[in-house]
Image (cartoon, rainbow, N blue to C red):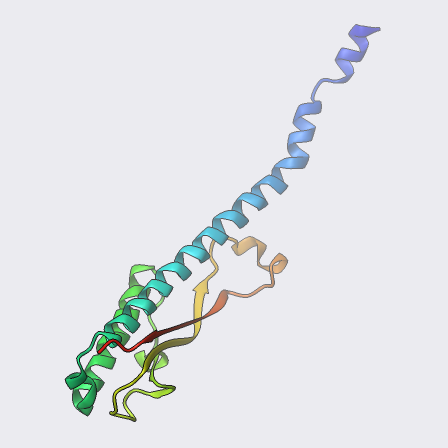
Length: 156
């Protein structure tokens, strides 16, 4: 009887593997995707923080003069743009999409000494390419949209 039972169990491991493997691969792909999204978000958050710190460290002379303030704003926006390039993300169509605010208004409007600097990226689109075959299961979009917002006190 034991010989017959042993023969009936042949191949059960292969069947179990065939049933579990697709689920395991889906979970693995989802983890890789999530890590990539979080890594891209972290790189862009660091770039936004660096841009805000750069603006906050600008001298009062630079922040009081309109042409200099606009140049500092352009440099801050370029820092964020370089962060996107470093993360392997598509470049912004325009650096004007990157908001740089002094006390709640765009920095190029008011030339008084700001109390706080804010760098705001309204919609950053992180590409979905790892789970291309699973898009219908996770919402069907080509990108994940995130918002970045960094506020720091002006230092000078």
